[in-house]
Image (tube, rainbow, N blue to C red; front, top):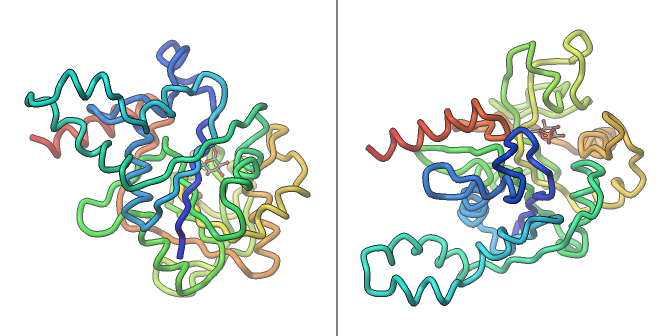
Length: 273
Ligand code: G1P
């Protein structure tokens, strides 16, 4: 059972300045819902009830968002607006939110390692909220991955095919397909140059990690861009034949950049009308 999901949310979001100067990028809304709430809803649908959020300075709005606002609720009680808080109230009532801070920006691997006290000794999911995933029919991406975990009992990364000239933005895998859309990973490299990429299969922001990842991360040296990379720690796990990549069903929007963000906004708006 995967009960906990970790959300690295300490990054600065510089691509969205000035909007992110005093506001966490995870709170940017697609229509009326902040990005991180989409992620938490996905984790809950996948069966997680404990959300472990790695925050940093200037991220207080995230903690407040996942808490009751008595004054506001009092104000809108009995009006048509009350309904607008229904979804977030359901999350607050049914999930536990835990927090710790990543004090220095030392990479995604470091952010995940900071979550160890919140996760303890069990496998866990990871959602990068700026990769917004939707599956209009059927199960969320994390839920699809939890099912796979139950079968394979090892770390799993979600992947999608990207254009060759985009590989420099992602962790890229080298792998063999063992079942339709399921790959055994042999190697992986963080943000390779186009001519060094072993494939065009890119890791997107959904992971299930077996607990030994923490031990490996403690020994992982800074890699690409001088940061501790989760890709390098997962690469260690591949040596024991223990990482699966999964070409998920659904669509992913890269809301970490303006184009993807606008695309997601249009998609959700068109769903509504
Ligand atoms: C991170 C990971 C990368 C992965 C990507 C998915 O990079 O380091 O391996 O492909 O997330 O969104 P970032 O986008 O944080 O630079």
